[in-house]
Amino acid sequence: MKAHEKQKQALALALAGVDYQTIAEKVGYNSRQAAWKAVKSALNKTIKAAAEDVKQMQISRLDTMLKAIWASVVAGNLGVIDRALRLEERRARLLGLDAPIKQEHTGAAGGPIKTEDVTPIADEERINKLVALLDGARARRDRQDHPTDDPDRE
Image (cartoon, rainbow, N blue to C red; front, side):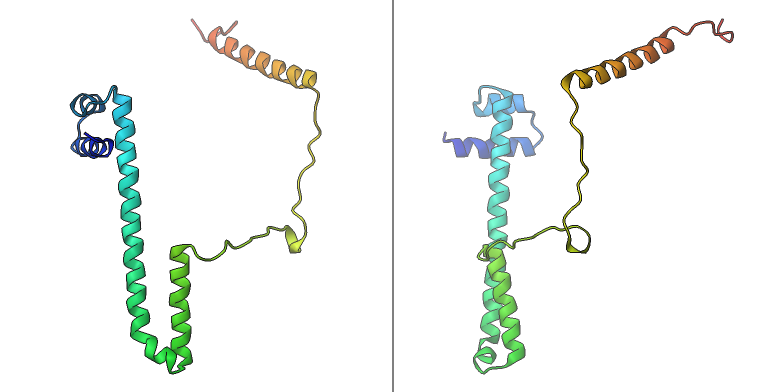
């Protein structure tokens, strides 16, 4: 059985609620992890195929719309020409034909983005701060675990 067919069978079993160990045994994978990977791969392929089908359907609809107004475009109807351009823009976005739009981020009033200066600290100082934090946490934990001289406790 080809890998693609095994993945389809594994996906069908998973959709039916079969656990991955059983899928591995029925389809012929070495482990439940391999069965899981096969199901995941089949799902990804199915999703990509469905997305491509939807994209082709959208392009077909755009073609139909453009054909319906083309005579008015050629006749010079400016409103219809604008509509045709919008259809073509949509097609270009669907097909990824347009170059990416460059975006520049700026701070207030178009100025630079303000950043906070962080003074680097030496490794030894960093370690000392961490040790102090850990010591404080341990002391709090110990007080919770072993309260001392608490008159309310029996």
